Length: 147
Image: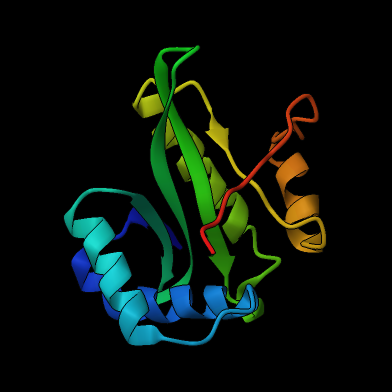
C-alpha cells in the first residue's frame, strides 16, 4: 500500500471516494460536482489530499486545509475529510493517512492539526484518540450558516 499526495490524474477514483464520503454524511450523490470541487482544490493548491492506493485501487483519502493561528503565529492544518471504504477498514489505512497529515504539519512547520467529527461518529471518536488527538474541551465551537 502507498500513501501519496493526490494529483489531477487521481480524480476519477478520488471523486467516487469523495462522493461516498459525502453520502455517508447524508448529502446527495453528485460525482461530477465532486470532481469539479476536488479539481479546483488541487489546481489552486487550496488543500492537500493524501490517498491510499494499492494495486492501482484507491482505498481511502484525507483532505487538509491550511489555516493560520494568529496567537501561535504559525500554520495550522484542518483535517477536514477522512474516508476509507467500508470493505478496507480495519487495515490501518486511516492511521496511515493521519500519519501523512501529521508529517505535512511537521514539514510545513505547523503548530498542529485540528479536526472535528460528529458526536455520533463512533469510528472516528475511537480512532482519533488512538492517534494522539485530544478533545479540546476548553473551547466552544460555534458555526454561522447563512439562511
